[in-house]
Image (cartoon, rainbow, N blue to C red; front, side):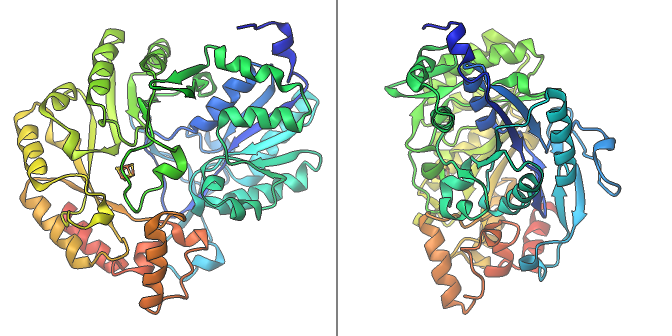
Length: 473
Ligand code: SF4
């Protein structure tokens, strides 16, 4: 690798502001949420000396002075997860009919502008680009409003939308008024910036030889990028991944659209980050994998190596793990885990929309193994999907009843129709068949799991309450 002063100066005269925007929604909870895309992108751009500023509008560590009167304070658990700053606001016109309180989570748009103006006056130079990150399609409204504010206040700055939302509905993202919409990953983003600024891009390949990039196992053409964890202040948790994507094809899931084919990451990629977390005194670690246990040896080796790095790590599995892949040996390795969530989805397991991921014997086997293990009961729960097309209230009621009898702690996961997934089309057909075609799920606001099941399916607010009462009493 040739890192010389020239490499480090290539983007020195370019300044970019990255914003993790506020969110407008009914509910939002920080369950190990980290804008990894931004952290990776900045790390790569720093290699070329970029002048950057990062603003996380959802940062729970801002103090009261950052928020208007009436904003509700966050509640933060000892592991750093918890509720964001939130202020009750009027819902968008399209959602006015729905009887539920609506909030802005994070900084106000006015405050964001004020912070950026202060930053610009400090550095005596405006930003060349402002990049807004995104995840869920149904959160596009805050991007749209933010773009309007940015355009009014920083006429000479180009606005870019990036992240998962444009990956899923690119054309919709193009309608929000940004100058550019970008739907690729962090490495491609660096190329994009070189292109936009007419820089000599012959140096970009040098990144692949740097210590920021880790080639994936079994596939030397793909790689992952180290996030710049230093961008986060007062961070109490870290996140880690051993794999990317998932080999299954559940009809409701967007894993393939977002992450592509299943890949195993280089173990040193995750272990390097663990060592870094130890230096920062971060011991709460959540796995981000979609399919963590497909290669059980990879997981077991990681846990073995992680214990060599520190015995203080506490691991969490906020994403569902596979029932069929969780053997006795795997459970043994999970004894100090504080959160273990399985993807049960439904006990109507013959229905292929759930992905045929386990057999009933495998579930019973797992429950026996869990009973025999030292894992505390309160740590374990099972996701049950609610509100899918073709799913009846009776089916879910039956799943919950049976699950409770088996000693399972169910956890309701409301369905979100995601464009380009097979079930999205089925959801549309079902709306027509049920004479509800006035609900237009091509409008992303109706893709929200806090809205769609309640207005489009049998899972009305009242029915959902019944299900929750069955579980939580
Ligand atoms: S197993 Fe999970 S991640 Fe994989 S396709 Fe199914 S829902 Fe998606």
